[in-house]
Image (cartoon, rainbow over all chains, first blue to last red; front, side):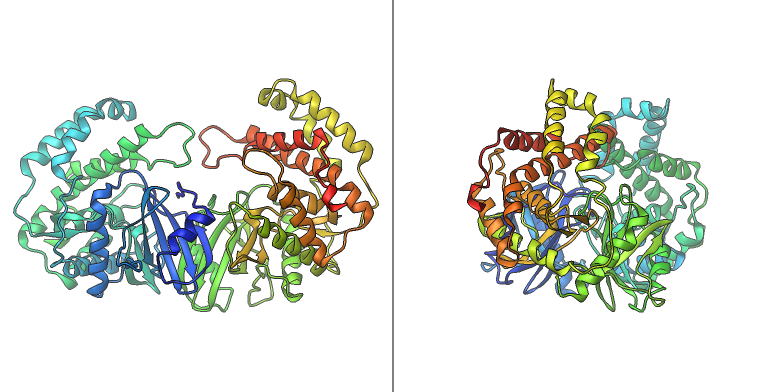
Length: 319
Length: 319
């Protein structure tokens, strides 16, 4: 939950003055998103979501992200669509920080996804890959495989603090991932953070995705691997193969995986667990005591790493 | 900002199963209210606000609060109106905690009230006093004058930690307030927490009040005194007499103050500052390091106490 920027009445008025949306009728900080400040804004002209971009999001990437959302809206993929001001601009500023107004996307995220939700989510992810296919924007995945070793080299002490001896295990994981990471899988725009809290459902059916602020150009199957880690582990840390099969089947209803993609999925899921383990370890280290934001537990992804390291044939159903 | 209770999909579904509001289409935690967890809930049947009652609110008081909101709705005062389930109940439970669904009240709170806002707020407060006048529910003000000395006796150490020597000053304030506290002013249902974040405006006009969870039976003028402290101090700690005059004038547009009420206002404002100083000092002490909720600064009200202690003729304009 996060509202880092408190917007004054005058700032909101000045911001809305650039748009033709009428007067504000409701404005509430929303406990959603860890990276940015989010507000529900209702005006005489409709309902919107206002995001003020805080740490981690590189302002230089915002035209890519907002352009992607615009593109998805034009290609009928359900996501929040940026609203342009009177001069055609979608990237705005509030209190010296970048900000954007987007349409309000209805739907509910699920806290405990069922197998049926996983199937819907898989189909939604493939839909997203197809809808974004011809988007001309490009962004390197700055949290992709090449980034993990340099990230880890600053975190070896923290890894051993988290669990004695963990740094050596992670180093060996990184060797394995480097040696076998595939470079010839089908690529395109990926969401890269397709977690249950970023996916909306209405009446159990996929209703859209939000929070595209890690989107980048990378392997489609890596995006699916991120989702497998995010959707298919039980609270006790066990991997739910039935849920994984449903997610993959749902994906393949829209886009068929190549044999190379299927074969790579276990390694990609191992790598995807590494990416979230490292960023969570970094956030855990960087969060000052008494902070308003509770960092996500790096141990959750340490346990997922261990599952993938054990190399059980998780994806046999997809082969 | 606060969402203390994370509501699962199954819990929301079970809750909505008791109502005839259709399926949920949006559900978001709202960064609003320090005492309770609040959610914006949209269903096929409309837009609502779901509150899960957490600490401080005594469950035994909830029928009084919900009955008051119901009464205000029936008497055309703009506030959130409790929604009854199929069996006529408004007080429900989620995850073993009391919970209630109310209608979504539109309007925006102001962070920096203008003099015009103060006038509107004063009129809104008098309107509330009149609308609630015949409400049959009764609740003693558990944070009223009689409660302050027992509260303070547990906080003398914290007062001196906050500012050396402060405990003796507060004790002398309490003597003064006890000696002169009026007991014969007009009484009725008061809001008791009529702060800018609990008051909504639309296009600059009073649009309603929320957060009635301190409402009680007490002197109307004490409610006005709470509002004077909350609305009429500048960020630099100075008291804005023009804003105070506007608040009182606005109030008197709807309900004329008696001479005794006017004469008592400076002392009531001193007492109202004491009430918020003491609860903030208590929360400041009770908040564990690393808590997600930042306690409100008790020093803000220590400074307001000092202004009232100096006894400048703040309310001459109202005499």
